[in-house]
Length: 87
Length: 360
Image 1 (cartoon, rainbow over the protein chains, first blue to last red):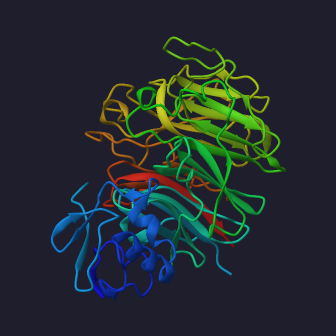
Image 2: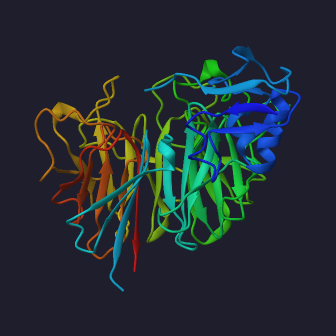
């Protein structure tokens, strides 16, 4: 199970969404699918048509910059970061 | 039950709710709501009692927040708010918002209209005004101003569900009488200070309002002057003479007097503040033939205030109250048709919109 960490900007939008959760997925895209199943609408907060990650949403897998198709290992750490933007 | 006067204030850092009683002297401030997302416009649907707020986050995209309990709890939805994976258009923000006849309509950038018939839970594309003059150009970035809003303004016909007006930013007003299946430009008589390729469009309409007592009487604040229509937008007459500037964003129609109309003129340059550092709302009571400057209680020196297109509202009480919010976070309120003013809030984030609703 990948160890998924979410930015502070998301749990305030979705009821009962934790900052950290374990998730079974083969890719970043699949991990977002799992989130969408439990918290409908969450995919739209992270992705835009393409599909692609939103411009100011960055994902790191095991501390490397990742995309939707990046593979996850069972022990991967996934960090979803809302990039520094705005004031 | 006591009358509640509720202001919905959309800011760069969430929605705020200001509440008073019929006297409209003392205001309680609640918020920020909507998780601090930038709010373009917040409205109250009198039929359902719900609040809706159009929003776009730098990080997490666009959506419409809704509250069924006057702000106690909120939910966000963007289900259906988009042009699909492979469409010509990309949705960057939701701007215009209207509630009428049991449904909601949202205006988006890129320019399109979305409809919700389930109280904002889900949305579906209603129209992108295909075939209209300008349609081939208005979604091209090189033709857009910074911060383009797409369809910024929406005005319902109170008596006809299928008829409404949409304002495409920088292109003008379009009217539909068949719920968005077909459209007609409604810009005849407007002024533009730039060359026009097609005289039917390319007018910069900032705010469009209707007299609640005469639905053929429309007013608008335009980039180039203030204008009146006596035939529901089929033709327009400029009514700028007597005002200190032909530029501004906000406008409001008097609820009981078809000839009553309010604007907030601004310097037309890049500053876009009230002229001479003096805060003022201007009122006509004769359909724009003459204007009066209303300043009592407003700061009269060093007050470089801006008010955006949704930043002025008027209630429908016997002595109507006016409210405006500034881009520097002040809300000013009047309970006597603008004769006297006082601050209702002074330190909010920059304000994009003010809406008022009276709950009896």
